[in-house]
Image 1 (cartoon, helix red, strand yellow):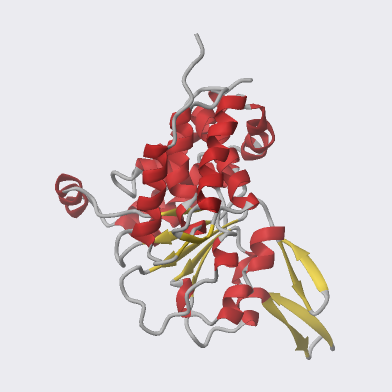
Image 2 (tube, one colour; image 1 turned 90 degrees about the vertical axis):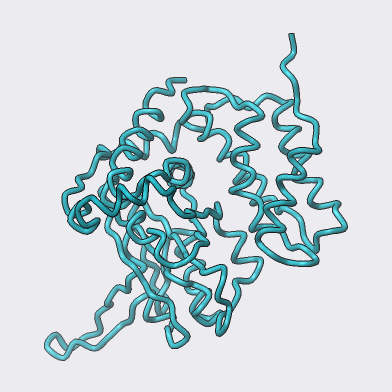
Length: 313
């Protein structure tokens, strides 16, 4: 298997997005993993850390159509999916597509909308299609939803149910820049001006080729067993109300394959599992005493406790 196309693809997007978002190469790389896996991202972070700018830069880098949707309590499902309206000039009903028909979606503060509006995302995320009044409309590829949540302020919010959290491929966090990085951002031109200058760096058909070839990355039996040790430990723990689902174990398996390919390898090593587990697993766990930090710490503890398979000499 040739891994150079994966490395080139990653480097082009990293270089382009890093012109806008400084010092977050690891997060951008995880978004690339999610894109190749046809997954979606839940981004938890404080306001003003660059979530919208990051996704705008990412959308421009891959040449995708971008839409930002502000989720509020009065948002209706039809505001997302679109409606059939009567065109008086033509004397017939026409479909007006909603913002979900863009390719790269930022669902900003998704937990501020009611569960009914949150659920309007499910069909588009899982099946890459939207059904309105019995008519099904396919989405354009690449299609990715990135939903943001503010982990600090929870007043007046509607937490996502576990079944919907499980639909997100990863949960990521940007965090703050270092002091030196932020001083550099303060001195440079406005980010919106830099964003306007950003050009697509991905060739048509390049992503589809990667999506069909990453499954060739080899996962030895010992690595697969190590991955399942992690998953089964969550299902047997007394600290959890619910462990990792089969969807979650498949997501971790694919993330490890893509991560290995982006590093230039055609085989998965335990470090790939450790790197991806902290992004793919925590939001799928339901702890008895639920909190995001606890779920992340729980996964990190598992990674420390479960023996890593060693290379056979």
